[in-house]
Image 1 (cartoon, rainbow, N blue to C red):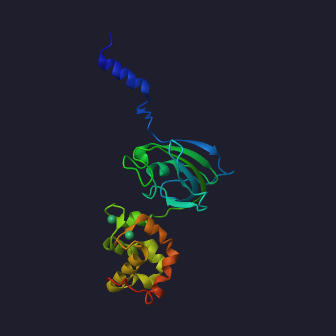
Image 2 (cartoon, rainbow, N blue to C red; image 1 turned 45 degrees about the vertical axis):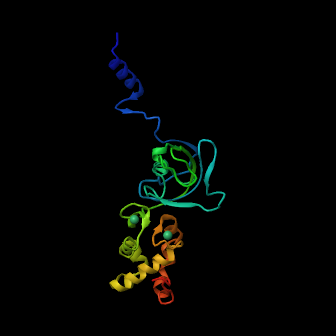
Image 3 (cartoon, protein in one colour; image 1 turned 180 degrees about the vertical axis):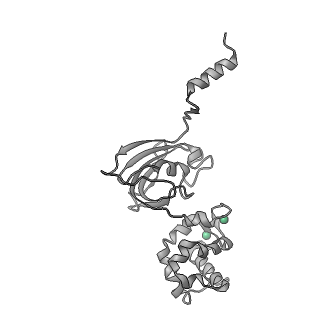
Amino acid sequence: MFSRTTVVLLFLVLQCSSLVCSDSSDLSFKVINPPYLGCEREVKEGDSVHVHFRGELRDGTEFENTYAADSAYNFIVGSRKVPVGMSQGVMGMCPGEIRELSVPPHLGFGEKGKDTIPGGSWLLYEVELLQVSDQGIDLFDELDVDQNEELTLEELKKYFSIPEVSKAFGMDFVSQDEEGTGFLTQTLMNLGDTNSDDVIVRDEFYALADLQKFQSMESAETELEFREDL
Ligand SMILES: [Ca+2]
Ligand SMILES: [Ca+2]
């Protein structure tokens, strides 16, 4: 007769192919629409991608729809801006391709959930890749050193030393002294901290839009005023 241990081992062997067990809680996806003809560029880690997507819970509740908002979404693959499952799910995609992703909770919003998404939820996405471009960095991830999803003034200071940012501002900007950088950091905080709680959260940061918007800061710096309580 088989011992209990043997039965358990046999069960595991049946569940696993080769050395890797197929975990039913892994991410899975299927291609709904193949890529445009002649895909020359597949998405890889660190790429900047432009997507449209719909996100639903398993009970059919829609929690996000960029088509409805007519506002395509941009993120760096691997950035903490999106759940791990979203980054994993777009890897290897080509422009024009549409995939359906089934993301388990641990690759989604975990046991805590987020906003209207309850903890422990599976996330079902339909993602359409519009564009992929070369590597970028997610500035929020770069600045949020302690990864608490809030940027303090201290963390924000590093903003102007990030090469991509200094480049956008030009060499004159890089040569700003400490006092000047401090002033600009505070200006950035004032612009981004829309609820005035002295930290910038991810949504506030992205709402500051792209670097182009900041390029006018240097010339506008004399026109901007500090908040009254400073
Ligand atoms: Ca932080
Ligand atoms: Ca804030």
